[in-house]
Length: 300
Image (tube, rainbow, N blue to C red; front, top):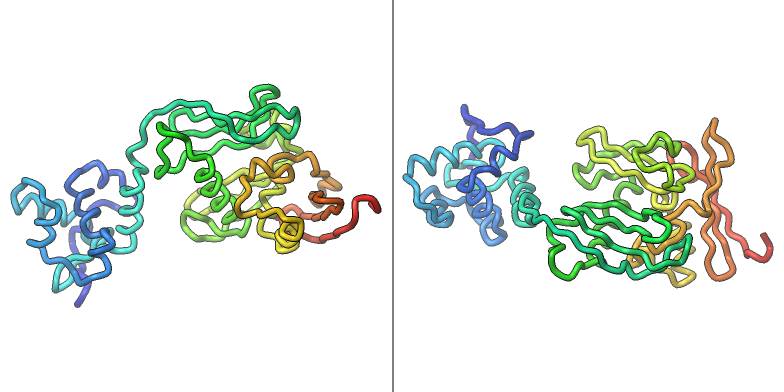
């Protein structure tokens, strides 16, 4: 079997939205991306048309299929199969990434504000989730509701928390969750970020992928989530970092235990206190952990 060198490669890979706007092409991607199909042999033209089940002429179906060949679909001597780029598009279509519904809701976030101890709210507005204290207005997180979670139904905060954690952890490990490239990390002063001046952050970690331009503004605590000493310290004190929502972790959700020791060069201290012990991490301007020190609080 050979891959076709098509003279009509269809839409540019950087313009998948032109593809999604056509129902026939989207249906072809769904048909070839189906798990029962993509792991098997190539699908012949007639069989693929039957699977898509659209009422169009064969020539019209062939035209739309041809627009996909080369970027999202591979044509072989035996038929058609989905390409890796097509699988990414299939997953986005299946998850509903292009079919969001406008919703608004406010529900309890399930924890007390680390600043004023008031119950914190989870506010959804047009696909965006804000974890925010209604009393002191501290904003713990702003994130997009994952496409697989129905914000119109009972809001699955645990699911969103796990999704957010995985994305932040990927950036903390210097792996872009969108394209897999290595992002850069820098420290920003509060006035260098797009957030309100009352954000109360001492500094922010800006982790940016130059390949796909995905980026996150993380707290210092979030930026070191992958540090083995931090994970071991929390585990030893009964705190599971993988299952606890980030906004419930004071060291990750606030800068209350962050101290800037120097700015040129950057030297930043983060302290995590649990059950009579504290772990101090020292990071530099690239968010690299320079030093770790654990001690009893009573001896500090």
